[in-house]
Length: 158
Image (cartoon, rainbow, N blue to C red; front, side, top):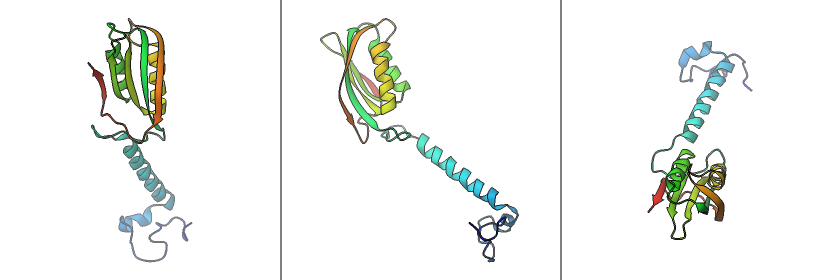
């Protein structure tokens, strides 16, 4: 790869020190120099994929496609803190959307986020809910791939 193994690439061509580390770089083996660059690139990549400022839209997380899905939950789901637990679980998973009671005694809402997280929340809505709830069935509809989320957090709609 480089003409003189064991010498900083910027010095390998016989020129003066052009490396940012100057003459110190002459004493660093090429493999260590390259490993340091790799570590820096990996660190910056990790920071870039994990850091998210509040209020900014969520986008592709770990290569996971963003989706939006509507839901309606049937059973004993009102008067048992179902909306509060749904909001807490959604926030815990990093999802955005909303939840509300209906006049029909159901709870409905919308989930948005990475597919794997939305799937986890769908399972939670179908099988767990709040401790005092009893879920008869969950309907999911209008699932679609989205480029960015429409909400900044997970809200309880009154």
